[in-house]
Length: 375
View (cartoon, rainbow, N blue to C red):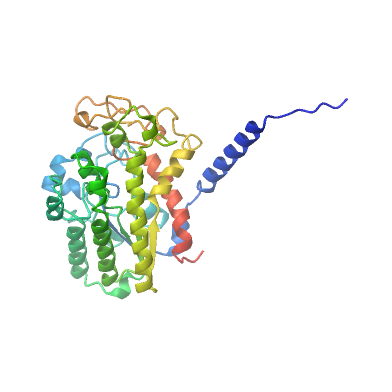
């Protein structure tokens, strides 16, 4: 007699979903050296703490206020403080390595080797100037090195090396990620999401102006990253914690704040589309940090992250998310988790080296077909 085993339909569906997620994760597990086919000889980075490799550390105002200047920052890979706001490498470090280039030195390091590019990013930086933020009633006391200041540094650098447009044809430019800090500052200083949202057109146009400046310098391949889903970031989850379950999505991220990020990203993407019409011979690529981060959250467990700590800070103390802004990472007595590689959030604001690694791999796979490289 033959026995028929009836499998509940929901189990079949669950197996399909798990296989799909695992396949998605496997697709991004290998990127080694893919960017070497692009033959970049230099990389130039503008941005904020997501990309800063040591500029803030060397600024009197920024360096004094930044916790990233203290141990345990840099404890992994570098085994010392470098000014990076992570336990180790950042996405730009992985991108440089996958391009076969050295890590980018910060512009403020006067004795550094800039033969393979320069990092102009500064932790805490905004796209808008400090003066523009004051007009929006947003105070900014962390750094004055907004995007326009960084572009001025870039201009000075190219003048100092007598650069020509021809020399930059093999270079990669990253204009951002930048523009999230003004939104965060506004929200944390009591502005409503609607009030902050009104800033989006101005921020987008400031970034697009920055892209035009890089093209004027001679850039031919430019990546313009969008914002993270910052409603998923530990600091935001802590600040705007609520008992309303409807305020959260399936990833336990704050819906309204993520809607703001998507609103910004949509306007930035539309502006890039318009730029492509004006500059048909320039490769302009939107860096989809939003979906890269959501991919990381969806696949976190299969990638080795602790399912119970996906939104908890590794370095921090207090509350549901192990984050307290008054006892931030680097302050005396603030503990560090046993294994940072099992956490996505490093200090409640920035990510761990392991999280940045996976983000960089997703982005490289997503952007490579658009870079027109020889594969």
